[in-house]
Length: 110
Image (cartoon, rainbow, N blue to C red; front, side):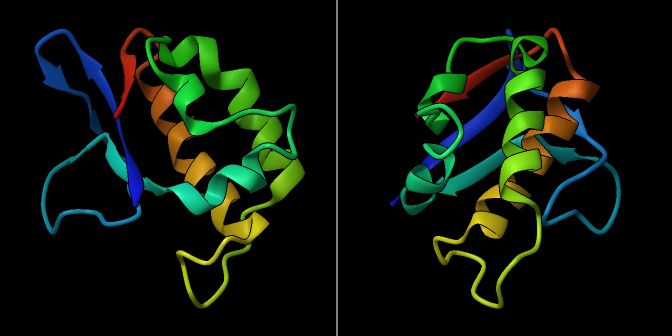
């Protein structure tokens, strides 16, 4: 089970230069599945959960995402869906990159 996270403008998903699964050509869409099992890792940083992104602008989330990365790190495990601080931090890294690239876009989490 996972949260479907998108950074979008009114009528389309934002296009981004950084993505964990980049296309062979062109830009990727700012959309990622964030596994529910990462929520306990994120809660180590002020009881934050992925759903807290919903409805906020990229700009409104930059500071929080940076704090998450600082606290959890970005060193991933071999199993990328394992509930480790580094795996959760690596996802936050991509979310932060997208927020910086599209500060006026709005997060949608379902």
